[in-house]
Amino acid sequence: MVKTRKRGLLFRIVRLFAKLLFLLIMLSLLEVYAIRFINPPVTMPVIMIRVTNLFSSENHVVPKGKWRAMKDISPNLVRAVLAAEDQRFMSHRGFDYHEMNSTVKDFIKRKRVRGASTITMQMARSVFLWNDRNVIRKLLEIYYTMLIEALMPKVRIMELYLNSVDWGTGVIGAEAASRKYFQKSASNLTPEEAALMAAILPSPHTWSPVRPSSYVLARQRSILKNMNRMHL
Image (cartoon, rainbow, N blue to C red; front, side, top):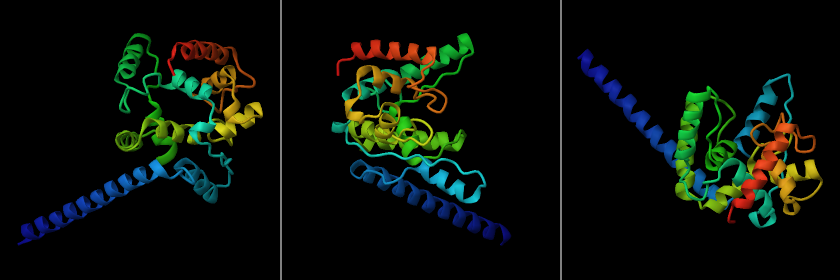
């Protein structure tokens, strides 16, 4: 009798968990599909900063941005970001296995860790997820990356990325970053300016495109070379 009750309780728990999981999957599908057509009014990292400010004595800067459609963003910036962050963006399905393999080999040979995140993975983080480094967040990043690639065209993924990526303290997206750093719209960026903006993306709160270190300038030169090789 006791065993029967335990089995019944376990069955109800499993069934409840399955229903909850199904609901979460359907909500995430709806969320990603909606963002394919609707520009997000706010991103999860911004929400998390606002919530943190409510319960913390330390007031974190809430980043601000201004949405720009792809046609209003300089092709120079698109090419620079592709050259710097994800040169196989147009051919992979969210995961660059070639880059992942190179990252593993680089770690084994030089004990140096470098990122292998694609633009799609970064977009998943900057729109749908919170800023953290743990297993749950990483698994959700992988899950959302698969949904995004399945439900969105590449142009929309790039548009969302350029409008939601963290580009420095108080800055989110290409338009706000362009106006902060170069006092011009993102539609008017030169190749050199675009390469500088792309160069700081791995560490936008440490590096600056207006006061570039020798390392950032070296990254800019490398990005410009790769831009010239691209057929876009």
